[in-house]
Image 1 (spheres, rainbow, N blue to C red):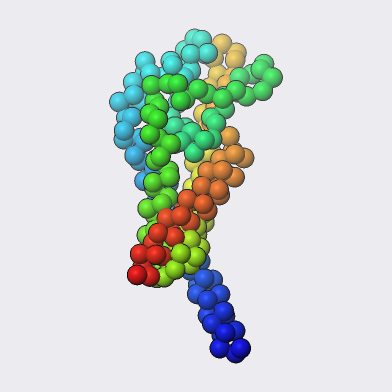
Image 2 (cartoon, one colour):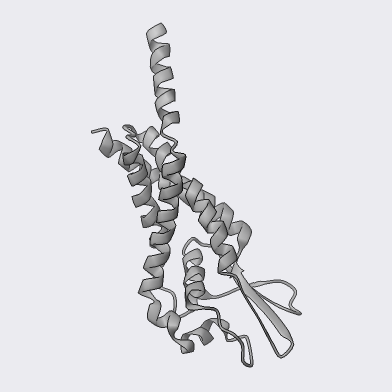
Length: 205
């Protein structure tokens, strides 16, 4: 009985030890940077082309300051997490989603970008923390949430955009609440955990 209790205690301790705050912070940030970088580089020509902007922002008239290319890349990256980018125009009843998936900026495979990035970094974190089982690996991989949710929240703020033309004010950016809950928490916990499971199984062989 004592031996069995000790075994359960050791298993519990090893799983708890798999939670890596430092590794999760670094892994989460790297996963975000990797995913954003892939999208930004793959669509750099479209993002830098002024003509492409009209497909997304055609509802505005007159001259206005376009969002910077790196902000547009951020919008696309959040949309790849199934987070809507909302545009709010003064006088309208409520914000409307920007149809990024119907624009020149979008590629169907973009939905896979954050998934692959989180699987890879989740596996790396689990392997680095010496997780040797599927459960311990999932816990370690899911710890990328610590870093991912932080940069997701910061990213929503810094990619926000506003302009004013002919007395009309407009602003746009990723939906903050959905971005934090879905992109910042659910994605890294689930997908990072899957990657961590893979890393734990590889390490435990």
